[in-house]
Amino acid sequence: MKNYQITQWCSRFIEEQVKEGDICIDATMGNGNDTLLLSRLAGPDGQVLAFDIQEQALQAARQKLLRENAPANYTLFLESHTHMADHVKPDSVSCIVFNFGYLPGGDHSLATRSETSIQALEQSLTLLKKGGLLSLCIYSGGDSGFEERDALLTWLKKLDSHNYLVIRSDYYNRPNNPPIPVLVIRLH
Image 1: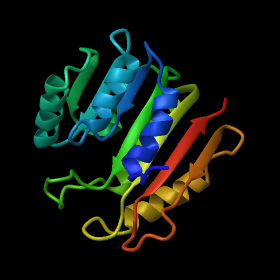
Image 2 (image 1 turned 180 degrees about the horizontal axis):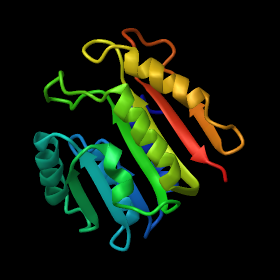
Image 3 (image 1 turned 60 degrees about the horizontal axis):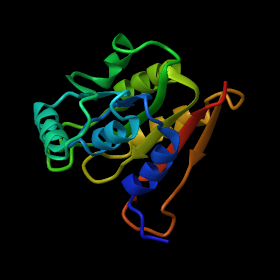
Image 4 (image 1 turned 30 degrees about the vertical axis):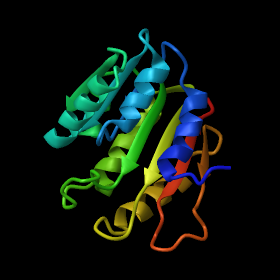
């Protein structure tokens, strides 16, 4: 087995989830890695919506998608993930990806915050179709602190177990507050 980074670990589940023609969301576009993955998996008949509040992220993602010849099935939004529901119908999305924290290589003072992250997650639950997947990478410590991590984990633990399956994994023997991968599957 390979030595998986959190994004590689989550990508394995995303690859199993997303099918040709699916609607997907990259809620935290960053440098465009997940947007590219979703675009390729959804294919030319699919649709990918990607959100970020930083122009630097949008430009980096656009360059990556063009450089990698991604299918022209994506729309990049320079706006908060709290506006996802303005762009897609409820019960229609196969997969929504979140990477909480700050833009790699960007300004560390611009990071996701628990209030807006939880608001976006609540929207996500209404957008997911039955069997849909949320993939969350929760980073903490260092510049981003622990407040968002703790708030997200508390929120996730309270999700109705009849409607959602929440799978949390840990890099149990890694030092320095390793990221926490979480999968949420809509059951009904």
